[in-house]
Amino acid sequence: MPRRTEGDRERRRDLADAAAGSPPRLLPWTEAGRPCYLSTDGGPNSVLSRLADEMEGVQLAMGTDVLEAAGKILADPASPLSEVLYAALRLSECLRDTLRVAESRGARIPEPDDAYAGHGPELPAEAFG
Image 1 (cartoon, helix red, strand yellow):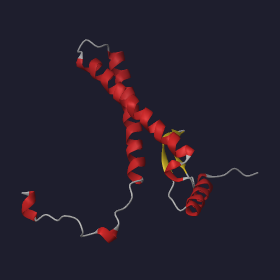
Image 2 (tube, one colour; image 1 turned 120 degrees about the horizontal axis):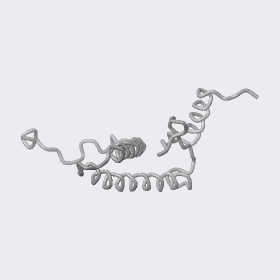
Image 3 (spheres, helix red, strand yellow; image 1 turned 30 degrees about the vertical axis):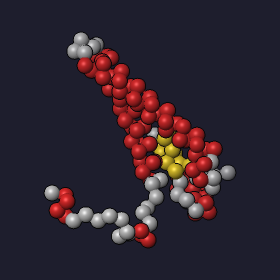
Image 4 (cartoon, helix red, strand yellow; image 1 turned 180 degrees about the vertical axis):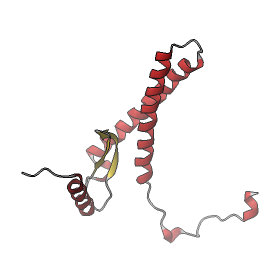
């Protein structure tokens, strides 16, 4: 049986997404450095989508913890170089995770409905200084 190429996998994912009527969701983890996507017809309330939501929350909470710990290390001029380097590596990992979460969540923000364009409050240019 021939091995599937990345192009084959992308085509299969695109077909599944077209059938489901929704674009794939970027997941908050990678496989060998490559992005992972979720294609489900269960939408944002599917079991897998909720699992991805929980993982995003865990990653963001870990980032907060790492930021706090790294701040203490970096604020102390007597911190050993090995601790500073470790803090920098962990901060880098957390930033990568956070950017992936932001990209995934941003991709899921619905486009504004043109039917409501012009129906909201409008401010004159002078209001912005």
